[in-house]
Amino acid sequence: ICIDCSFEKLMTEREIASLVQQLRYCYSYNKKSPNPCLVAATSISRSGRTRKLLEKEAGFTTWHQRAYTCTEESLEDYYNPNTDPTVLSKIVYLTSDSATVLNDLEDDKIYVIG
Image (cartoon, rainbow, N blue to C red; front, side):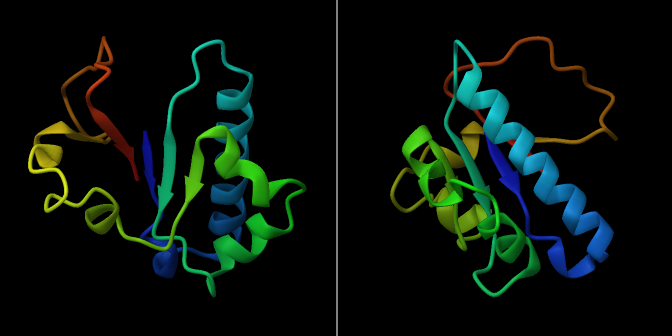
């Protein structure tokens, strides 16, 4: 799963605080899950407000030890087609605007929330 945080510049302080809370929830639920998955939150700039709020969270510096990565890299750079030519065919960008209903998850897909 990838959480694309590249829209921070368009967000209000309140929306950023809500995003940080949602990232915390994702981490917490994934950590407790009997079937946790790899999670990457991309486009989290070290100088950005999202990162600064996350750094205030107790234990944030150890999230990567539980398969939860927060990176400055963009979605496109993190899942680089130069290192894995098939990666683009694995990306599924989830949106509430889609008429398609996702009933099953495939292990080899990268589901993007953003």
